[in-house]
Image 1 (cartoon, rainbow, N blue to C red):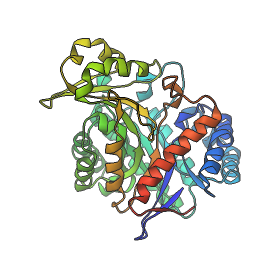
Image 2: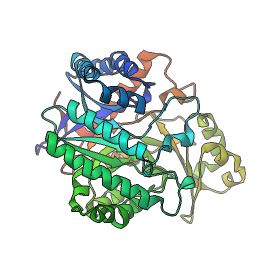
Image 3: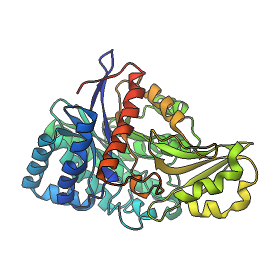
Image 4: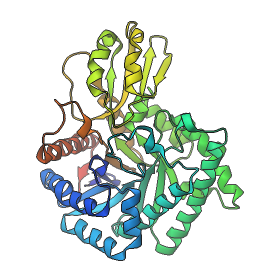
Length: 404
């Protein structure tokens, strides 16, 4: 939906369709009718903006076929939907039985990642509403740290510099601005705001200059996607992180509104029992533990963290990269979410000009514990709509109103 602030600032509030299994173009069209249009009707808005996930397969079908792009445009219009942002992070089947670290392949040193992202840019450029100045695409933060080599950051920067030049040509040719946004994530080589700033300063801008191009091209076409869950897992203060990123002159093109699992220090002894139902086989759920001295320890997934039983004896705060519904309030004292951090971030983002796109991104609805998992399409639609309403209320507290 379109959001407007009293001073005229405008943005879009949407949700990411990577929650749905949409591996090919036909399943994209089916999802618009099965989920997206019902969510729009449930929200009571005339027009709903989408954060559409297109796999490599879907993107290839769309790029190769003007007819497919026309069909997508017609389907969006017929359902009261519009396309303003894309999720270009998962390349392959994001709903395979096991995804885990495969989500980071191919990385930004691989030409396939560049080709895929440029294809997404062409698609978004063509389908972007006429009155929207900039489309955004979120993407992985370079590569997975455990498979990175000493030159990985430099190799990824070189490929992204190539992309920035391509996006500039696209803008000149079509008059449409596309911004590709790196999304810091735990256990990637860019996982914190400080690492993101260092990458832009030490690698990305120099890589552009080596091509004989003004580094300002980075500011026009590249940026960051700030995922609230990811930064909460890192125990980053979201407002302080936002200030640092802004001071470094890096644009945040998209904010993913998401909540992580949390266990407070006073409930450490209950952490294992509280978290075990969230240990599942499809996605990675990185874990961070911060003790009373502020020392942070990490695990690549929830299973190895749960196996470290001796760590649950001493009081410590726990954060888990498991996107949980924004409006969910766990029962009892052991389990919490990082919704408070998210609300603080929304208040800070509401003051930013220009405003980033805002995208609810809870892709884990179908792997939640049985007590939280949707029973059918209707309960999934209801759950996603309630998340969007949660975000809309937070924006309304900052003076925002929906336009449509």
